[in-house]
Image (cartoon, helix red, strand yellow):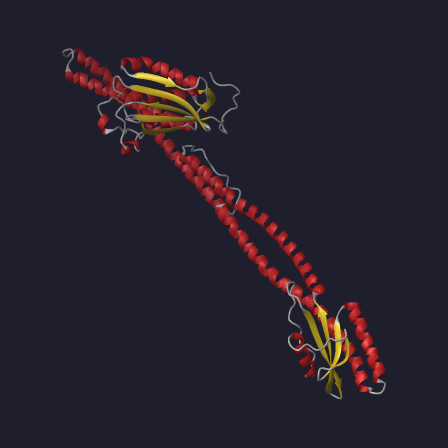
Length: 473
């Protein structure tokens, strides 16, 4: 979400800074040019006063014209600004540098004609740093209410463009600093806004993985997200309470039904004493009673598995798996199924040894049940990334794609295997035992036929696990 929110904030802030900076930059350029124009107006006004005196006093005009010319020459040498006094027909009264005249067209001609009309020329067009040219200002010389001459100055714009560019660079530096501050503020703002969202996401993911104790601190972020965090905590409390009630009901019902069932089985055995030995009905009733007892035991085990917390320890997974394979080897030999183990001699991971052993027993037992005589069940161990994987692959009939989506559900059994003993809770109990310790259980086809069950155990210490220095042996 930050990847989408942060660019949007940056674009908005950049737009605001540009909207403020562009008019400010134009205003800076206009101020700098206006100062130059005001100076040129003062200069043309002074020269117009001198020229008026020359024009009004014809006698001694040569001396006064020489004085005016000397002033214009010193002005041009000192400032590099062309200046001249021109009659109405464009002929020069005095000019510096020599040979310079009224431009035939362009900005200079427009200023000259405006001055002939009896008014000072308009402000020149705005000069920008990338424009090269001159700044022309003209003022009329008036005698008896008539314009008898025009003073024209033509200034180079290099210094003006340099000053404008310098101020623009300062403005750009300020805008860049403001943008960096804005980006930093945007990072802090998005972090403040999204931190509760990330916490909520982690807590929701934890609940989806079975960690029902996951909660969210509702003391940071915007008010709307704090309310959402409180609502999430209330929902989690209700979900945990409902599941706890369900587990308690299953556990209590299973426990309470065991005593009457045991008494019922005892009475069946007593009744069997009065009937001929091997009576089929008595044998059938006894078998159904024993099956019901196994179901109740499995229900109680499932309720306890979902309720109890895992006792995580740094465990030698390879030693544990090899031990369980050895324990099941006699059963495999009785069923005429080859049970093998392949993997390293020692691999450690964080697991509840009792829960992992129980889950592995259920998976191996399930594989031996469905593997025909003469076939093989292979148990392998490997390290994949940050997980230790234990794979149990059999050569039984396997499951269809639809059945693979349901395997591990409570009481579910394939319609093709209803004649095999079991309650349909063994894999559900295994999944609950493993989930409490952060491990996972998954199913996949085993080529060319059969089922592949994979248990993945974390290698890194979970945050809430005790600090163990040595493997559990």
